[in-house]
Length: 147
Ligand code: HEC
Image 1: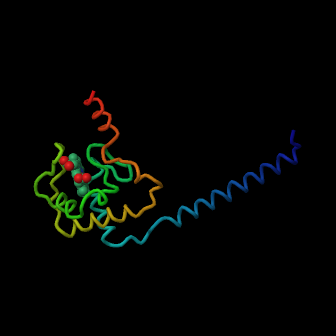
Image 2 (image 1 turned 180 degrees about the vertical axis):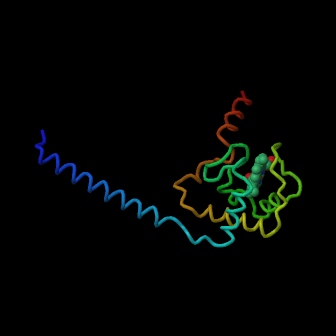
Image 3 (image 1 turned 30 degrees about the vertical axis):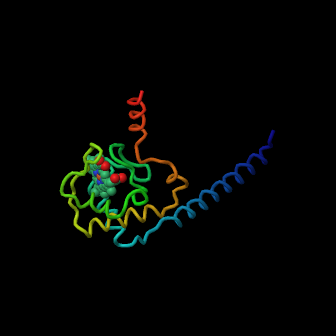
């Protein structure tokens, strides 16, 4: 049993140590935040958000499962292929599901590509090694169909 004095000391030391850890981790996290994005990356990110790409795609695992995961799209696809998809005037649907025909101009397509390149340079803690091109839901469905 702790005496009242010891309990008080335990409380104070415990509170101080966890508070110090909390402040330390906060500073550590803030140092990872990149505030000076290159202009083309920032424009691409803005296009990404404004056009609701995440309504169909995932990036870094976030978003919807209708269309391919795009975190590593440039490792999988040639830059010109991606540009073609983004600038296409007709809905892109090689595999039966339609990508919106945004008909972006060259600069917008390049900005989005700069954004994808930048996303590809983030430390993803191993996420990039897992094949997430096809969503988990679609994978299950493919399994069902093969039975
Ligand atoms: C309505 C749903 C939808 C929206 C919104 C959408 N996409 Fe797509 N996208 C698709 C589908 C479906 C495909 C796959 C088409 C295929 O290969 O048949 C695709 C394919 C792509 C591809 C090629 C990926 C690959 O691996 O072949 C890129 C790049 C892409 N989209 C970028 C974007 C960007 C950038 C936005 C936002 C500006 C966006 N998409 C918004 C549905 C969508």
